[in-house]
Length: 422
Image 1 (cartoon, helix red, strand yellow):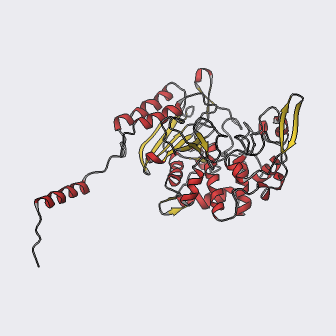
Image 2 (cartoon, helix red, strand yellow):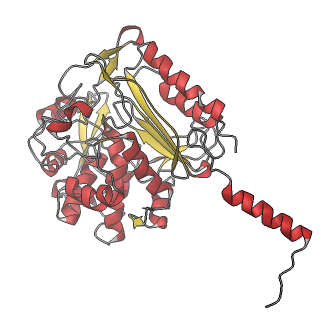
Image 3 (cartoon, helix red, strand yellow):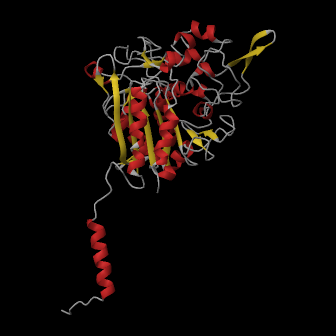
């Protein structure tokens, strides 16, 4: 056997490679491309809001390339019970439910069970001939919709469907158990009927804009939840559990919380006098029925509860093109469709768009320091998130504050980005 010989240059390269292989990985507290000292500014920000009693507590989580680079629990999950916030605290995520329901819809689109341009009346017959309430000098008149409402309209909130709290329709909605009769309009956790019964009743009510002519935030995704049930033949909670949360290992993302886990759920507060957080009352405009409710209404637009870790993992699947941990939920092209502006300038003329379930950033500066291509949304209880593919980041902030008069959300986002140096 011939003897191997190495030049001095080769030996140097071998030595460098060996050092690279044994070098320690960056610590989770700093993470790749994030300045540890700058990242610690987040600690001070969150603690100040707690100390100033603007919020009771919060959980913050930042992933970079799927790994946690910042995770903190501050303050109280229940201030009056002296229960501290923890990283596994459960939160009502309200409209952050929309991202999971939209994912469910797109999974069925991939199977050919739902068409993007398909009329919703194929699934809910009461939507075959909808009407629009038009305010005129003489009063309110009801006119026929110019065209059928489609799945695309619902995914982009351009169907003209609100939460029914506008003066011209509020009393009509109240009489049907919707709008003012449902908390702030979107709340259905206390309803003792399946979501499809509620949404089929909605189809008999007038809407507030013509399909495709305006961005109107409302029951759109709740209707889509019913579409999922009709197209799949199973309740929405079962579909989301078997097709999304269980495959991804999300054990804490559910419509209702088991009674045994009651103490894991953070209490709801609201910005009161001078912005001080005050405990919200029981009922639809406060604590809600997420533990003791009838457990029959699975609201695809606002019904889920989750943790920061669970929700961040779901978002990481989206950021990763529809797959995570060897499990594929959606195809990459489907995710691209969801996270690209599909609403033109109807949602915004300042650089924000709306895809199929997510608000999109189309101009740098339209959403703080988020890069073009970032996407996100939030929930009525103060939870918020952003996914920034260019920066390889998922950012989640969980609080329970309704109404929320603070500016914690944009400040938190800015402090995450100022720590990003590579």
